[in-house]
Image (cartoon, rainbow, N blue to C red):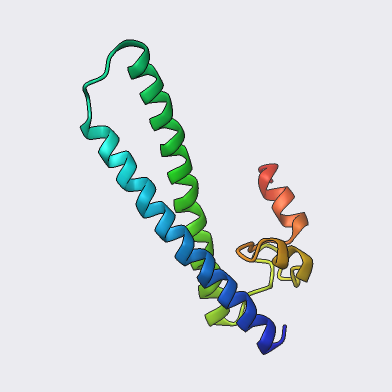
Length: 116
């Protein structure tokens, strides 16, 4: 991978991290605020709880993505970015372009998801 490609991926990952961190902070504040307002009952309470669960699930997904992006940035620093952490082969550029935070080639990702 060229120095220019690495710089492009770094910039893209840093932008994603910044945007995600901002969105996560907003979502966390909303979740915190929803925990402190307890003046609802019945159907309204059920709707609020469902909304809270959805927001909490999204917040968890955002936290996981922040970890993946941070890990990708660490791999750039170590010089291992773009190499599959499962088998060591180069991850295709098209896969990195689609999702720069990936750390596994498609074959290893499928095996990971299958629990192998």
